Length: 225
Image 1 (cartoon, rainbow, N blue to C red):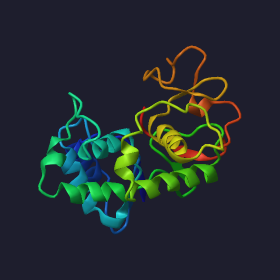
Image 2: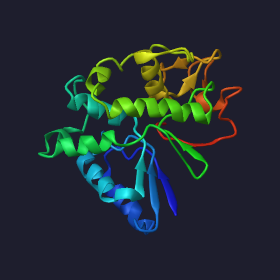
Image 3: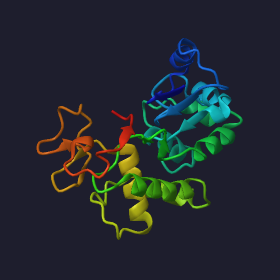
Image 4: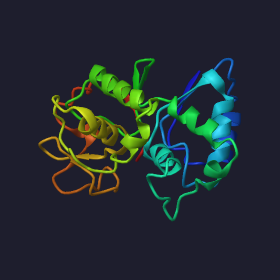
């Protein structure tokens, strides 16, 4: 059996109870985690340990809080007042946990479901989404990650252009896959609101209601909201 879970947010005990309730078996079942498995909750470290203990029976995509952990660990992003990442950052084997995070995905296609943390822009089809996610994963696992982390916290560019290259292309991809909620009529990203899908900024629509979305016929599983 396959299970999809979003936004654990450092809540290891509820995750443990959920897996018990499902009678989850690593030899029989597979767990897909839709990002943000750390921060806000009381036990980010325990969550990481639990997920890693599942071995090949778990597949994770990264969310904005998981990237925030990487940026904080690299010293390029200050901890927020409400962060609950200290356990991870101060444990003796913190590098092991961060290396595990870096081996996770930005988008996954499995069982005809495209899985991401936040969403996709209407201009991307499934193939393009996976291609751009793979480009981001190369940076995630490569030697230039720290330099990239220094420049990711920016809302620009806010409109997809297939001619984007370098940092702008990667940053746009990251913002879409980990932060997107609302789209303006011309297809621009709008990050001004974190309200529910029914209470977005005037003139905007949730990304999954954007007209002419190229992934309209693709099953998509996402968290973030």
